[in-house]
Length: 268
Image (cartoon, rainbow, N blue to C red; front, side, top):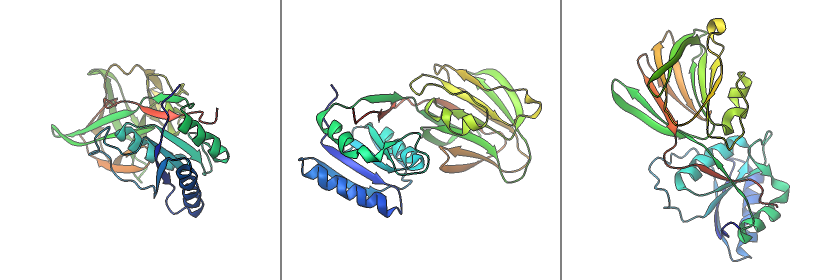
């Protein structure tokens, strides 16, 4: 039996009146059962300075679609607490159905829920020998060209050993959770979400000389920006974007701060 939960942060999709109203209804329902809940609209707040274990909450409940869930999941990852997604969006691959929210919250209060442990990514962007930026990703990290249709030259290594190079529109490094997203659309593999693996998928490689692959997580993945003939960008979980330059190096590893703990069947 899991640990009963009594304190919640309910994050609602930004600008969504329906989600906000449901969140307030949930908070009232929880208060009647001697549990506490704070309702907030989700935003892209950076959690890099948050210390795990510092949260006053025991879990995050997310009301929205997959985009809202992914952003909230990064916050839950930084706080080291589980997250339950209730789908109010159009897709909802990552979230549970919102129609059974009473049963799902009852399971959290009673400790009868099940957790799914998910691998997440951590990365460093190294420029001229210095760490320019660090971050985490739940779904994927994408190196891609800008608006102009010009190929970029990338190198890939694993544990410092060369894997290959390519000229392509970009490269996707995804978690098993993220294998169902952009990576799948680009021809990458579908991987069970609880596996320990990195998915490496090129985007439209020239001459098709670099194939999608799945590799163990025991060694870092390196991505080198070898040649730039236009804008090149790093996108974190499809939500935050940063410019890259020739000579930049990305070092990608499993998140050393732990895994995302997702509530998968709170209505059981």
